[in-house]
Image (cartoon, rainbow, N blue to C red):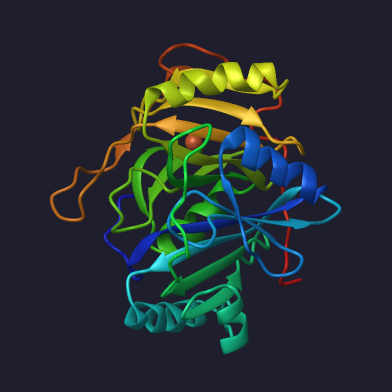
Amino acid sequence: MTEQTNHPIRYSRLGYAHLQVTDLDVSAAFYEESVGLQRAASPDGEVWLRCSDKPYDLILTKGTDAGLKAVGFELESDAELDKAFAHVEGLGFAPQMRDAQANAQRMVARSFTFANPDTGLTVDFFVGQAVASEPYRHTVAKIARLGHVVLNCKSYADAHKFWVEQLGFAISDHVPGRIAFLRAWPNVLHHTFALLEGPDDGLNHFNFMVTDIDDVGQAMNRMKKANVPIVFGPGRHLPSTSIFIYFLDPDGMTTEYSFGMEEIAEVGGREPRELEPKPEVLDTWGSIPDPRFGKGGKIVSVHG
Ligand SMILES: [Fe+2]
């Protein structure tokens, strides 16, 4: 059984996803105009996009291959960051504390970074992120937050060990050996991260949660009009009850809007459920994913 009681780190939330894209201008325009993020002031070489009161929720940098470069999680407190550093160091992952200059550039008080030894994916933990100088303004969609990041995992067992057993993410629902929807414990959102067993390590998709079902319906027509491929949905996920639509960014990476999500409290929350491996788990409305769904992004290792 994979039920767990081990939570060595107290997470606050998924802070950001860092993507490598092949054309910064094209991707930035897509995320701004079609998805509804807001461009923000950013250091040289990075494009920052926002959907919250923070300075960035999505970071883009340019590179040869499109893919996921890093995920950042905010921890609950300064003390938690020190605890997490010692824990990650104890696991042998050689975390590096970022210096004051690097933290100032990313507008956080303190942070450290390390890599998943199996996939090379960079994981950043931070605390004390600044608030943006102006509020996020909705444009084409009422985005509430960056919702989650989902990975394709060549070795599901290794990924499960890393994220669940070692970093203490909590299973909300799973198909053992194949799919795990994970909470950044004790964050109540049903999943801010998920693992899918797949032929190669890579980005499956990342998600923006919207506040209105109309945002999903309007996206369908907006994307069609702009010739943006819709690769799954609209539909409804069985485990989280979210209503979703997935589409491709200019590099073919899969992006999602979803509306609604179960919340599971730290104290008294329900136990993880074991789901049957059937298509209805992904969509109770019966849509079938396009072959391009979840295949467009590599893991881009930055730690080398
Ligand atoms: Fe999703």
